[in-house]
Image (cartoon, rainbow, N blue to C red):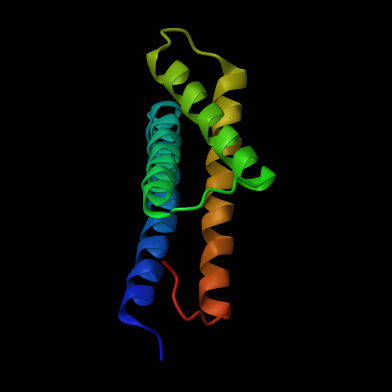
Length: 126
């Protein structure tokens, strides 16, 4: 049987995946997709960085792996491109395509994390 905390995390991941799909469908039906996707990427990347920072305050011994550094660097790039897309007055097609790719990568990572959570049983997730 799953712990209550793990069930909440699974529900949050399902909600985030549904939010990604909902914004994609809503943005496709309205002309707001070019604004909503960078905003979603900005919020998602910022929340990942915020989680990482608060996790660093909780642990006493710090070891930075290259995978962790690469993911943090990628999320910082996503935040930078999202700020540029939201603040820019001109329309850049390469930037829009880049945000679609970033959004789909975030969505696929959420789905992979959900499959991981539902497949393997853990003693403690957090």
